[in-house]
Picture 1 (cartoon, helix red, strand yellow):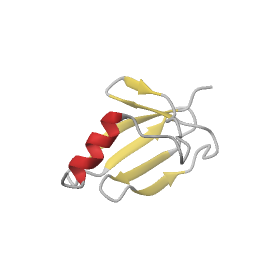
Picture 2: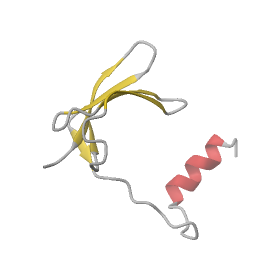
Picture 3: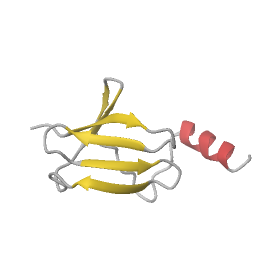
Picture 4: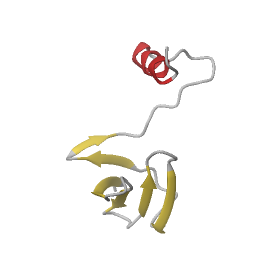
Length: 83
């Protein structure tokens, strides 16, 4: 069975609320610090994809340490660093 996290609410404080309809995994996410408050652990060991506004995305690809970043990420990081 697919485990898809859906963004179910964004609270006035910008805290996001996510939930998996399959296993009940449910948490709040503070977007700046990426701190999670787990409300229901559901099947915590299952790999979860995510969905925002009906658009689904698969699990992220994990790059190796020696693998170069795609150009769009390098540009984004440069902007964040003031470059």
